[in-house]
Length: 302
Image 1 (cartoon, rainbow, N blue to C red):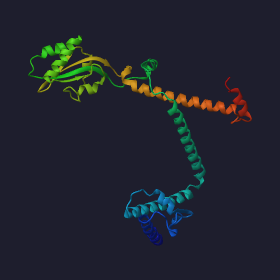
Image 2: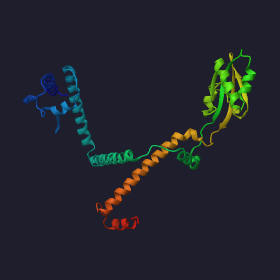
Image 3: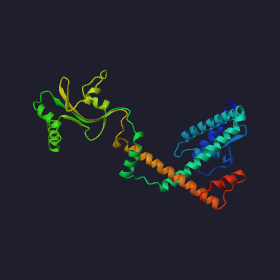
Image 4: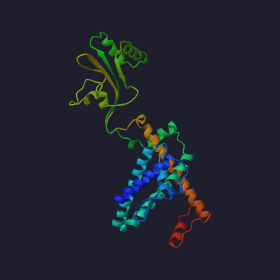
C-alpha cells in the first residue's frame, strides 16, 4: 500500500476509534458517507465498515478490526479489477453462470418450502418391506456377515463342558441358564444372535492373526474353540451370509427410509411444478408462439 494511503488510513482509523468510544451520534465530519478508501471507481465508505463491525469490541480491537477490513477490501478490489481486465472476454459467461446459480438457489428454496409443508416422514413396516422385496437385487453384500456369539472363559473354570452344552441348546430356558452363568461368573459374552456383524469384526473377538484366513470356520456347526495363554474362547456361528447375497432387511432399513423419503420429496416437487404449470396455462400467464405453441397443444393433458 503506498505511503500516502497508509498515512490516510491510519488517520481514518484513529478517527474511527475515537468515534466508537464517544456518543452514538456521528459528527458531520465523519458521516456515513465518509470515504475510507478508493480503488479505481470503487469506494469504501464509513457506513459500510460500521455495519460489519461486531458489537462489544474495545476501542483498540475496533481499530484493529477496521484496519484489517479496509486492507482486505482494498486487496479484494485490486484482484477484481485485474481479473476483469484479464478475463474481459469471459465476463458475459461469468454473469450467465452467476444468474443460473441465483435461479437454482431460488428454485431450490421454493421446492424446500413445499416439501417442508407437505412431506410425511413416517413409514410403515409394510412400506419398507414392500420396497425391499421389490428392489432386493439392489441390496447386495460386499463382505460376509454372521450371527453368533463368543464367550471368554478362564482356563481354570471346571464346568466348561456344561457351559458348551447350554450354549448350543435351542431351548430358551437353557439359553437363559447359559446367560445367567456368564453373568454370575463374569465371563465376557459378546452376543450377536439377534443382529448381524461383519465376519472380520467377529474375528476381532477371538485370538486370531491377521495373516491367516479363517473363512472355513463359517462352515462349521456347533461350538468351536480357540485359546490363548489365559482363556478359552467358545463361539457359535448360527447364520452366515456371504458377499453377493442379499443384504438383510434390518441392515438396510434406514437406507430404505432415506430412499422413500427422497421419493416423497421429489413427488411433492413434481406435483407442485405440474400444478403451477397447469394453473399458469389456464390463466394465460404463459403463452407459446409458433412451433412451440403447436407442440404445447399436442402435449396438453386431457
